[in-house]
Structure formats: structure tokens, C-alpha cells
Length: 436
Image 1 (cartoon, helix red, strand yellow):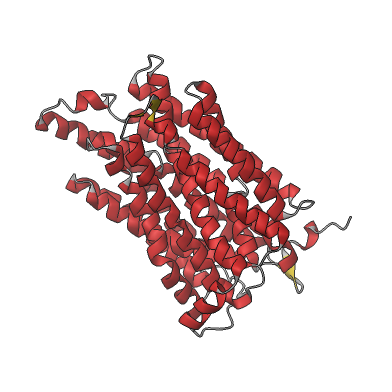
Image 2 (spheres, helix red, strand yellow):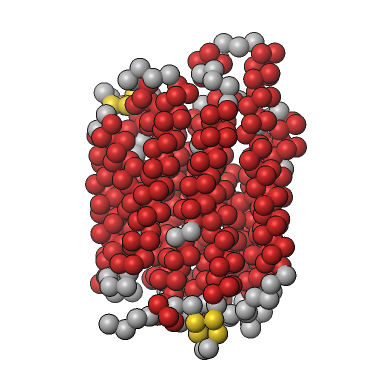
């Protein structure tokens, strides 16, 4: 068998190793932002004495920034370059993270949502730039493998984000549980809130400083200008052209539901585990921390599975592997719904092994053959991250019902990720059958 590893980062005699490493570092950076944020739904709900639905506004603001800025980012990249898009993304990321400090000074919830929104406008620029840039750093035949390789570093950043959330935020918040906080007078409540917000903002401000350092490193390195030759912006004709492509259009839909499934499974594992472990007699804070430990295990499995799946892609059709993993993910989701004991948690953790391949594979399949249009195509796929903004609040509203029939509402709520996996199964099947 021909070994293609030697050529995966080479094209036309150009070696892309150093640019690949620099841009791949951005994948870890947005992974950190994503997964330090997921547990904050529960944290903000406790700090501000809000419902799960109100706490889920964090995800609305976070993934709403991706949606709002994706096509402006594509226009910016088209007019300037991938490097310019990445630098602007890093700048907005750092600004949003540093805005957590003035948000804390207000003592209010909504300034934090604004900071999240600005931060993720930066992430939208980063992802709209970095994903197609990585695809261009070699031959089209190795593009999906190359993107999977780069995306393998995303869960490493996610693991760090989860670790920081668990050990430097959740573990250091005041141990008073939700029920007791509701009984506090305004003065005592304000004192605990001040302490908890100080704990919460510190990692965000520190990551803002790290982002500025990465910004300077990329700014001073001469990056290749792959597919940066055309600077015209034919916005509506390009949109019409790419959305007339069935593989691309259905890829955007599949990506919407995939991101929704991912965010729901990684956000509400905290609520799922807290209910489960408190039913076994554990205190609320201990149950939350233990649930986050399971979330970290899920991310470790996700990370390992990403490398394994990237290797398997050398031998197996991407659509076939995508469909197979979506089927297994759907089965695990049914287990999370119907088991009301530790086996349900095991199933919920197992879903991460199935999700590992999905984002970059859907991305690579959808953009295949778009050429220069990949800049706008990438924007549509990043806008599909809106699934992480729309679907989690729907699941949160189900969780707030407490019970549905004789089942915990948090278990029933995972019917939404199950539906998402059905959509992905369909896209994988269409890819195998080449029904475009």
C-alpha cells in the first residue's frame, strides 16, 4: 500500500509543517473555550440563583457569536487572507476573555453574556479561517485526513478547559447548595456571589493573556497564502452556487445537528450526573464535581477515539465510518435515556467515542471540490454551530420540568441528541451512496 503520510503536509514542493503546527494550536485554544464554558451553565445558575433554562443563555450567547460572525468572517478572509482572519479572531477572543473582569465588577449576569458573545465572534473568525486553511495545506486527496489530524488537538484543549473548570472553578465555588442559597438574604447572597464570580473569571482573564502571546507569534511568522489570490466578494452569487450543491447543503444541516448533540451531551452531563448521584445520597457540590470528572473521562475517550478514527480513515470510506459511529451513538443515547442508574452515565460517556470523528468529517465531505468557494462554504458550516445555541435551551426547558411521567426529565431530555444522530446517519448514508 502506498504510504501517503509523507505527502499529507506537502504540496507542489512546499512543506507546510510549521504553518500547520501554528494553526493547529488555534484548534486547542477554541477547544479550551468550548469546554471551560459548558459547566458554566450550572455554575451561573447557582451563582445568580437562576433556572437551568436561564443558565443555558450562556450557550445561546456563546454559539450565537459563531452564527453572527461566520459570513462577515468569510467576507473578511476573502478580501484579505486566512492569516488576517486568524489574527482578528485571536484579538476578539482575547478581548472577550478580558471583558470578564469588568463584567464581574457589575455583579450582573448579562455583561457576562456580552463577553461570551464577543469571545465567540473571535472563535467564529478562527474556525472560519483555520479549517479551510488546514484543508489547503496539501493535496485534496489527503484533506479530510489532514483536518482530522488538526482537529485531534481540539479535544486536548477541551480536556484542559474541563480540568480548569473542575479544579479552579467548580471546586473553589462556595459549597452552599442551590436550595440553601435560595434562602439567603440579599446581603449574604451578594457576599457569596462576589466570591464565586472572582473564582469564575480568573481562568478567563489568564487565557486572554495567553491568546495575546499566540497572536504575536502568528503575526510575526510568514504564513503561506493558499487560495488567497482572489479578493473579490461576489456574496450572493457565491451563496447561490454553494447551496445548490446537495452535498454541501446537507452537510450544513448535518453539522447543525451534530454540534447541537455535542453541546447537549457535554453540557447536561453535569445535570444528569448530579441528579443520579444525589439520588444515591451524595451532596450537590460533590455530585457536580464527580459529574465533571465523568465529563473529563468522556473527553479523554473523545480524544483517543479521534486519533483512532483518523487512522481508520486511511482504509475506510469517510461516509461509512460517519454513519456507523452515528448509529452506535444513537444506541448509547437510548441507554442514557432509559437507564436510571450508573449504566446511563456510562452510556452518556460512551457517546463521546462516537462523536469524535463527526465534525471534521462532515466538514471535509461538505467542502470537497469547492475550491475558492471553500471560504464561504466554511462560513456556512461555522454558522451551523448555531445548533449549539438553539438546541441546548430546548433541552434545558425539558430538564426544568423535573419529571416526565415516571422518568426523570433530564433522562427524557436526551431524546434531542438521539434525533440529531438520526440526521447524521442519513448524511453518512447519502455520502456512501453518492446521492448528490
